[in-house]
Length: 181
Image (spheres, rainbow, N blue to C red):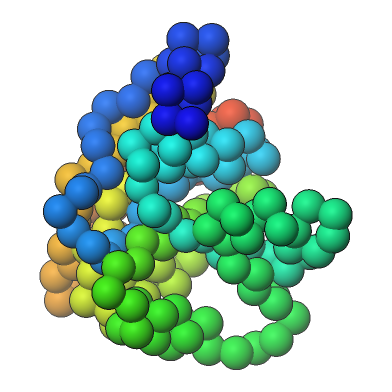
């Protein structure tokens, strides 16, 4: 599967990858941005398959219903009911704490729609679970995915968020006007 995915992603579609997902760290959060189009999911999936990253993701519950729900589960997905006001941060921190290995990939925007400020759930999950963040760009302007080294959060959220935002500056999403940092 790795060879086929790599051939399609790199040779047929012309995308390149800069950096690697960590292999020596068993728990971390991958934040993939900008998330402006449904194709971003397939870019993340291509990285998961070509780099053999056992990443998990969360998605809106409607994606996990028949006839295709089983596919999203098989790819590492877990449904989230957005209508319930449960504390998802604490629930995901508990997932990290209860597993020997857990890698969570998510979009910090929380939607494909334009946002000027990211949701901070990923930050609070990383802090609560004491895991690093790996940043991943989906740059349609350069046709490249860039993966950062793991970033370990400090006790200064403003400093951390500025560092994270700077990694994504200049990146062009599939729908460029849907991404503003």
